[in-house]
Image 1 (tube, rainbow, N blue to C red):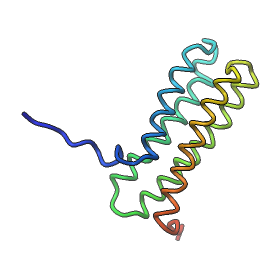
Image 2 (cartoon, rainbow, N blue to C red; image 1 turned 30 degrees about the vertical axis):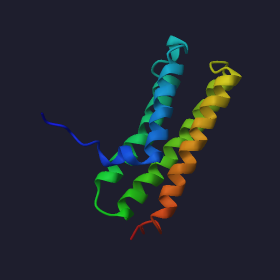
Image 3 (tube, rainbow, N blue to C red; image 1 turned 120 degrees about the horizontal axis):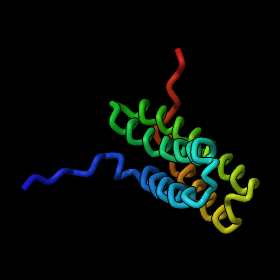
Image 4 (cartoon, rainbow, N blue to C red; image 1 turned 90 degrees about the horizontal axis):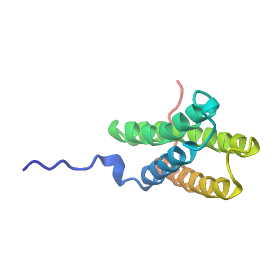
Length: 127
């Protein structure tokens, strides 16, 4: 019997928390208005998926500099999620309890991604 090893990114706590956020965002956005299917729903789903995707891609690259670069991109995606959650709350799509829960999940993921990036050293230069 052939057994696959889990990909390296699955061992990263930052990826695990980002993935939990993706699942929660998908569950929550199912109840949002259909008129937002190609707007806010699509945008927040793509932003949340982007965080975990960038961690997965960065972990497959050679060297910590590359993972740090992708972790920084993931941080940008998580910031986008934060703004989109606020927008959904202000439009009345997101109840205060869900705003708190999803915001807390996003904060945990962002703290872990930031810690990962910081642990990997100086960011790559643009030159």
